[in-house]
Length: 116
Length: 110
Image (cartoon, rainbow over all chains, first blue to last red):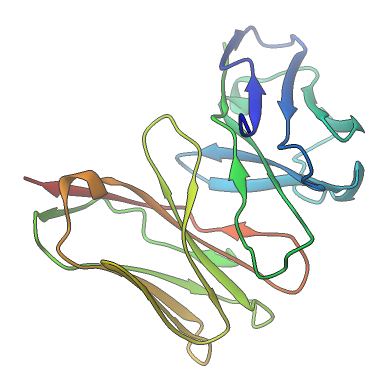
């Protein structure tokens, strides 16, 4: 398995532009998570899905952020309009919910977002 | 107050030293406790997992959970330069929402 795949690896954009981050989870995993990592705030959970349905979006910072999961193999995180304070590394992670004793979250390599 | 508190460091130790990393938490509902290791420009990877209180050992790594004190620890024996990374504690209650600490940057000097 190729693991969790995120794209793009790096994104540089100007303030006010729309940004779309993409994620392909590991096949068979029914949970998908979006995290944001900054030096100041560490790794923050933004939203997570179960079977393509958003379960908890309480970590989404504001209405400028939205996330979708149209099918089991694809999810997007969109920021519109983007602001410099959105600059961070955005991680997607997936896991199986079948084995509760298996705690492993599988992370992608992240998208480094810079908003100028 | 954050649900999970972790000293960001950095922590610098000589090769062969014993390393102690710690986290405290406020949510008494947390039952599952993990340690992830993150190398530069990579995603975190699971290192250790413990359910409820107690100790767990895996090679040079030992994880401890003290639920009465809301305190978890990771010990690394005979630390190696390859252990240099950021170590994040993580925990969750009964659902699937996993909360991470800020991460402690560790440098092991040869």
